[in-house]
Length: 210
Image 1 (cartoon, rainbow, N blue to C red):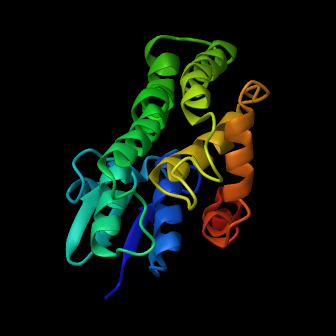
Image 2 (tube, rainbow, N blue to C red):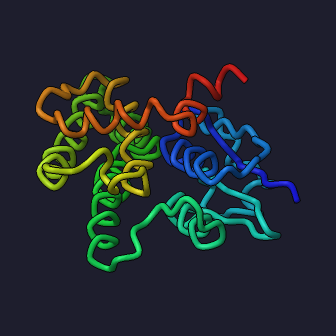
């Protein structure tokens, strides 16, 4: 069985799925999909994924979309290591932290939104960068408080769904020069996660040089 990931190296949503695949030890073939050049709008891709978004994962005869849904599928079908706690209360907290990033920060800073600010509304680059930093800071402020007292990872003793979302967002925050000083817990957890092979191999720099 060949597992194929339609991937753009700098997409944080794709980055999440790469981490999850690596943590689960699932070998996959990369299908480069340059969203800056518009590869995702080609008919061959939209026939499979009408949203015209990456990532998309072909696995088990399925075409899966939406990064958190993909990760949930991987966790349900490949049980080790678990990416979500089994305890209902702990699971809810981890999912809430993941959603702060995946639903509150990321959509407002997605390439489609930034292009609309540019092409649709004529917002200059400096203002678009301020927009990006503002929404990262809003999410990180809440996440830092929620994460206070966490162990090695947001998800517990081992990395899970929340950490899979955090690390790509921290990468993007640094690219846009977000001041991370107010978020020492997030910085610590990100640093620890990035020492792990599954996270290192998924890093955009590692993927771009393949």
